[in-house]
Length: 562
Image (cartoon, rainbow, N blue to C red):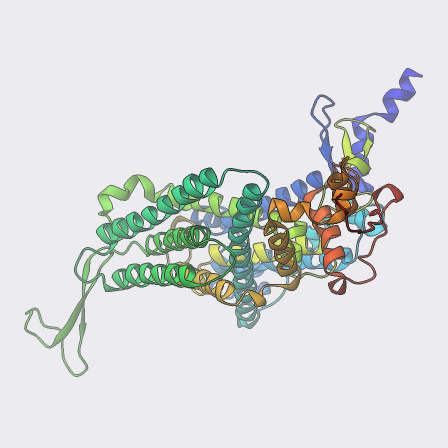
């Protein structure tokens, strides 16, 4: 009996279910805390994405390229086969990054198409998403080999793929900026909800919100001054001066428009939103200006058409100075070798966080992605898988905790974004790992992102009707609930409250939100919205309540006084 028990709960069995079955992966140590199925699966996908991006980054290193070239003495035949011709080193440079990015993108797009419409983890397609890692790794490796075998003698395929990837990377940036603006609005709604639930207005509005607003605007001014002092003080740094002044004035204009816009939100909350957006825009301005190439001062002499080379400064020549507007080179020696690699790590962490967060139910519904899962905690409906090693909690047996297809779409777009960032966007031939993030393409991408962020926030403030319908409806319901004063909230039942003085207000609350006090905020908002806005919900949304949760019939009558 003991031997059978050990075989049933062996680590080898659980790992076989992960590699060749439909089970999610887990650790072999039973002492580790339990892990959710959704968390484990996303962690494995992120792990393979990290390995892929690390290989891309290594392919952009001169040292790695030379080492690989030395390992294959007859590399010219391979280069001729893939169509590299005389530029054989390009196969291990930006071309290798493009081909790896193509394979990983196709891999996630295939999984996106496979998992579209999955409702729970009990189905076969959900099992492919969570398990079968041996076959999925083989599929990824096969796609990588196929991508390298695509002949491209004239680089037509590489150029076409570069522009397609540029569109995908730009879509990833715009998506994250939209969700950033939504997140700022969501923070404001949470503060209002705290105050309406009994929080101190003096504490939240007078101290926290006002304090954060003042700190954010102070940070904006300090960043602008430091940028001007370090990157725009010298003569000839007109471009940096223009960047700093334009973005600072744009933040001021957006703040004024936000303050003048009338609405249900308090003035201090509107300025709170504008200050956070302005601080993020100033951060983008700082990263953009500091991403300029490290070209030091140099005098370049070129002959004028029809002239000759003369040693005298009065000769017929044109001269100009290439100026790097920034700290002196002696002050940056320690950072020259550290910042590029640190930037890759920071960007990867930000991309992973954005990819995982976008697939959450709230963000999925905000983007109006079809077939989004409902929010809420599903641990109560979960079951434990204790076949061996770490205990696995199957928290998606009844409903998904994140959107499978949107998760794969965001991983594909994140791959394109990292691919374009590593290859310098539209200047791949001059991109190197040692100069990661230091190019004029990176400067203009970040500056454009700051302007797009301001535009999205300004439009969402002036025209709230363009906000996605699902997200806008949630805001409308929340504002309707938060706009009720305590006296008005208690008067929902009207004379029914006077008719039954022993807890009728509590019964009315149970009628709207259910009898269980453990219901989540999202579920209570959904039930309230169905009651107040029945025309905006389809028949599929009208889920009948349990008998104990149904609203009581309220008979209103006039109370007489003797």
